[in-house]
Image 1 (cartoon, helix red, strand yellow):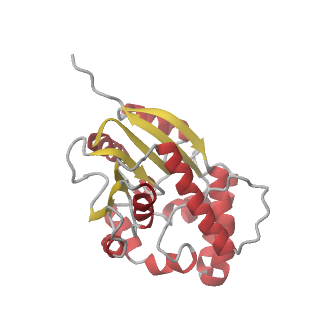
Image 2 (spheres, helix red, strand yellow):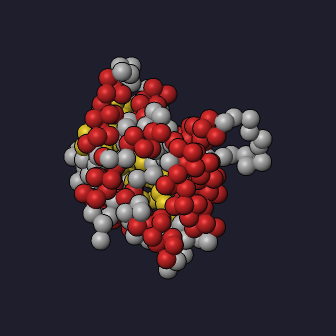
Image 3 (cartoon, one colour):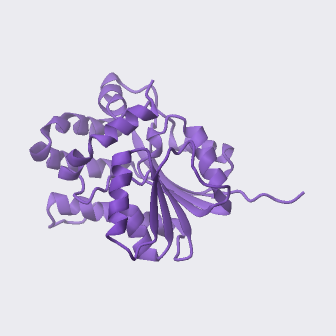
Length: 272
């Protein structure tokens, strides 16, 4: 059984590695490829960065975040997307993350971007240190699969959102179970989480947590596209990851891992 402490230690010690081939600025989420047939003249690294930003833009459009929004970034990592959100829209962003290394990095990034209204704090998604109804929006990318008490995290996000507040996020899914031994070892065990639930089951969990799901998107082909580019990157820069990253591609093809996006709204309380 994996714990939050396992996840914290993993990311505290992997920042330099991921910066070497994923995003030098410290971003760590997946990419979006709106036109899979487009010819690309960019380098592999440039294609990845473009795809990462394209997903930021797409999730932002789905979220409805504006300059007046107060946003909780759940799993903010090094703060790159939090700062981008704040600068891009003028909103106020509060980022939380388990990793002390990454929240320290995020604070330094915020200090170098004084025009961005951002704050960062080391905290767990299962115990969010803010009051009920503190935020108009919650945002999360490539994070919740790491939270071993997922239902508790969803309840906490629900609590800190105001009535009618929006939760826009993506997460890894498990389209079918059981998964094969290779996917178990090279995807799930490597990333310190257990096979979870399908996108349809996720919608049911969100409804059970008090959210009305307004939109979902199957992003599995985009996850595959991300890892196809990452395999090219790691072959030269981090060859020890070539085999597990190829296993991710194979697992997507086998339906043993997927990626979905969700936009949902906290159901407003009505007076009796």
